[in-house]
Amino acid sequence: MTDFWLHPSLILIIGCFLLPLVKGPAKKTFMLLVPVLAFLDVVMMPKEGIYGVVQFLDWHLTFGRVDALSMVFAYIMTLMCCIGTLYGLHVEDDSQIIAAWVYVSGSLGVIFCGDYLVLFLFWEVMAFSSVFLVWFRRRPQSLATGYRYLLVHAFGGIVLLAGFVLRYQATGGDLSFVHLDVEAPNLSTYLIMIGFILNAAVPPLHAWLPDAYGEATVTGAVFMCAFTTKTAIYTLARACAGMDILIPLGVAMALYGVVYAVLENDTRRLLAYHIISQVGYMVAGCGIGTAMAINGAVAHAFAHILYKGLLFMGCGSVLHMTGKSKFTQLGGLYKKMPRTFVFTMIGGLSISAFPFFSGFVSKSMIIASAFSEHILWAGFLLTLASAGTFLHTGLKVPYFIWFGKNNCSEETWEKAADPPWNMQAAMAVAAALCTFIGCYTPYLYDMLPNKEVVYQPYTPYHLSETMQILLFTAFGFFLLIKKLAPEPKISIDLDWFYRMGGRGFYWLARKPIQSIDTAWSEGYRVMGLIPLMTVSRFWSWFDWNAIDGVVDGIARSVRSVGGRVRKLQSGQVQYNLYYAVSFVAVMLVAYVLC
Image (tube, rainbow, N blue to C red; front, side, top):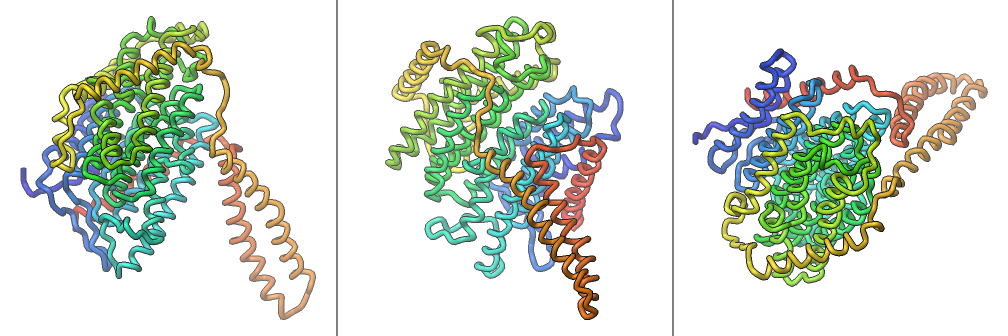
């Protein structure tokens, strides 16, 4: 290793610019080479320290803060970028891969940043690049879903920025991204925390996640499930560890996600709701804040990226091959897609914390830290949530897709088959890692930030406790299997409020506000008073260019949030995407040159 430091985001951004220029058989090789180079860059990164400091106006922007916490997240995120790119190798649309790489580069930018300005830059890059992974599905509802996703994250960005500004004032100009004062939090601390937990999908700020992840492209969903929420966990572990309010929020997440996952009929929306549940463990771990709890949150984020990516790849393969994603339109597919079934089952066992799979060695660390700190209610409720995890992801998903009643149409059954080789290879790699982490714990534990923590998951008590929970859950599932059968219904979530609120705002803008504005302008016109004519002319100009334009623009945007949208034009999406890529690239090139 040397002291030379290269930001892995820069490799991905350069790859984005070069990808459209590579033609023919070399394109697939290039697509694999770029994320592999980013991964190797992280593996060979120099020792801990501060790198990439850029003078900008009165600030010193830090693009490279390398330590144990940032390294473990950078390792798994670049590794998942390799797996996700392999999974999407068959995709002919370069724009999907470009959007995914920009999205990953935004996540890595947050992971390595050392100040809040750089954090905010890459935080917004994540939001404005990942939305294209929803829009590129190009269904009529994709545009509305993407706008909702974007507006929610724009709101979170504004809250986060407000917290940064207040902190900047209170500290006399300090923008360092360090641990906040969680013992006596002020308004800026709470605003920063709210900005972080919105990306972590903490209820009631969570409905964007199942909405967007269920609508994303098959490849896009694999990327989206791995990065946004886990980047938020990194920021919480870095800045908000030990903040007591995160414990009840995390426990509520774990239970809330389980309940909605049990009710869900769409396979990918079920997995999306369960992201909320699993991230709840990590949020609770950050709230507990001890060395073991932080290690548990980090380990669970690492394991979650792999097994949740594997589950989205499995269910995405079903969607890719059959065109269906609802349980009520599937069933009996183990005969047609046997290898996909095996890979998905490994993901289900991993997320259910089955012994010798990755979830067993990570989730239990968080629960053990809750009991060791005598937060008994949190420990028991998180244990209860783990039973719900096995109920729907370990049992419901495999049973109603691969076994159970065959609800496939004749056309669906004929199309069903294991997916292309690259999708199977990506699932095989993720499945192997899920098994390897569960069997050989030092691989994961040696990367964790708090080296002094010693934890042994394979104790007789823990094994017997886990097997009892899993067996009783399985017994209950098969006893009540008819009651748990999926139904073609939609579960109303908290997004109902801003969907209806969007329509209400549209009516308010187009009716009362516009009527008052028109009456005001007309009043100036009919007065005919000379001294007021100049004011009237100015008001007419201002009314036409400012009020009407802004109100109409906002109303149209919010109207699209309510679901009434036009078809997305792919050319416009590509233009906006290249604009976003150019913006990020200019910032990173400026950093390198400086």
